[in-house]
Image (cartoon, rainbow, N blue to C red; front, side, top):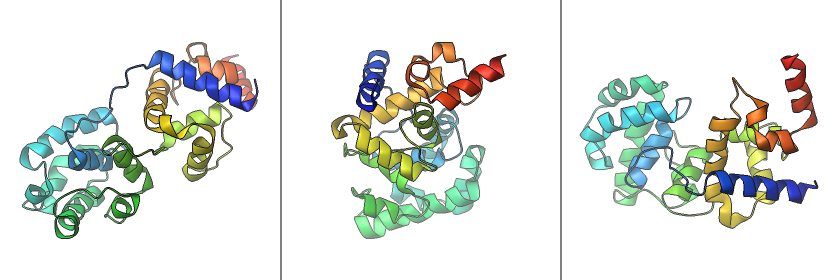
Length: 218
C-alpha cells in the first residue's frame, strides 16, 4: 500500500468500528468540557468522569467556581492528580472568562490558549467538541498510534499533529481523533497489546514496531 491507501485504510477501518462515536468526557456545555479536559491531563477519563459531578454539583459555571477557594477546588479534584496546578488553573481561568469574556468560554485557539493551565491540546479538544471547529488534538495515545502506523516520524505531539492534519481530510478531523482514541484503548494499548486484535497495526504497522513485537513474543 502507498501512503494514501494506508490513510484510507485507517479511515475506513475506524468508520466501520465506530460509526457512532461516544464522547469520552461527560459535560453539558463548553465551560464544563474545558474543566473536564483540563482535569484529564495525566488522568484517565474514567476517573475524571467520577470527579466532575462532585465539582459541578458545587460549581458548573465560572461565577460559582470563583465563589470557591483554590483550596476547596483542590480538595475535590485531588484524585485526578496535579491538583495544586489544576485548581489554580480552574480558579484563574474562571476569573478571566468572567472579566474578559462575560462568563462565556472564548471561541478561538488564541483566547483559549491564553487561559491558565490550558495548552494547545486542551484548546483543540474544546474547539472541536464544543464549537465544531476542525482541530486534531494529539495526546500521547494518538501520537503512539500514528507512530505505530508509520504515518508520522514525529518525535513529539506537535510534529505528529502537523502530519495528521496533512494526511487526513479536514472535514473528518473532529470525528477521527476520537475514533483513534477509542481504537487505541480497545485494540492498540501501550500495555497488554495483542497485535492479533489490532488490524490496523498488523496491516500497515511500522516494520520496526512489528519486528520488536514478534521478537518479544518469542
